[in-house]
Amino acid sequence: MRNDSRLSRMLHVLIHMDRQGERATSETIAGMLNTNPVVVRRTMAGLRDQGYVRSEKGHGGGWTLARPLEEITLLDIHRALGNPSVFAIGPADDQPDCLVEQAVNAALADALREAEAMLLARFGQVTLADLARDFDRRFGASGRPPLQDEG
Amino acid sequence: MRNDSRLSRMLHVLIHMDRQGERATSETIAGMLNTNPVVVRRTMAGLRDQGYVRSEKGHGGGWTLARPLEEITLLDIHRALGNPSVFAIGPADDQPDCLVEQAVNAALADALREAEAMLLARFGQVTLADLARDFDRRFGASGRPPLQDEG
DNA sequence: CCTTCCCGTAACTTTTCTTGTTGCGTATTT
DNA sequence: AAATACGCAACAAGAAAAGTTACGGGAAGG
Image 1 (tube, rainbow over the protein chains, first blue to last red):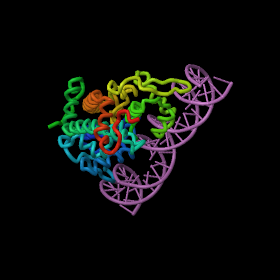
Image 2: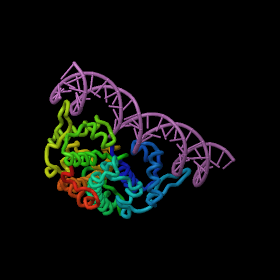
Image 3: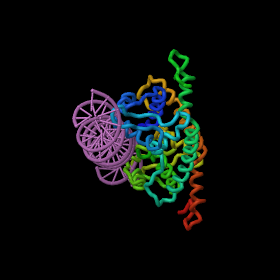
Image 4: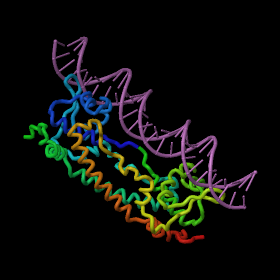
């Protein structure tokens, strides 16, 4: 099964949007992600509904950030994407009445719950601004202009 | 995407096998999982290769446990199933050369790696015997015979 | 106005992954 | 030899995600 990369994609897009400052159309973004404007609208819809970006219709319209990157965490975006399941593995429900199966599933669910809580907690502590800073630290000195206009 | 429930299924099967003691055919197991004997063989193949179960061909053949439940951890089975990806979310590779994408993916990969390590560590500490004991503790007193040689 | 640009949404198609299925070979017991 | 089981390859079916097409509506600019 291939991984759901929407979170990664959206983070990528938001940081670029912040950097460029200008309005981005779905088509521009689609080009950046090698995908399709409709897919972009579909994915960004959640972020808009949660108030992280704004969309404007009509001539000159497009997408803009509704908040500074400092105020957006990875968890925020994860949730705005609909809290997709974090795990690829899960319980079986072949014999819901089988007590052995119930015991197995309960044990698995415990472990998964704990791991998920930890992951989401960590997502909640990282802002997009942190990622942008990471970017500078990792690549800023390697011949590229740094993220710029951070001021 | 639906969850991969092979781990759960195999744990379920192994505990039943221990309990019954007898040889189980792929068909019997398939019946228990509401699936198909070929699927069972496919899934059990990994466990056999790692020495957790044995298969015997021919008349009277079938599957048997090759080790006591005390010596099999959830991690063992997870690995025997081919170390399937634990997460449903992952990095995008739309623009592998984009440094922003790289930074985003690096941050995500860190968090995922950590959560996975924690989950697998926990899997490594739980044996199938623990699950069987869980079973007894949770359900044994509720009118059902306990796990051991209920024959 | 009215044309152009751009998002919103529904419906449909394509792709991809997993599971399920069929068929045949081979080993083992009776 | 007949019956029973696994091993394996190849194929079919099903489901989920992504991609696509099509059309409607709102906003800006000539």
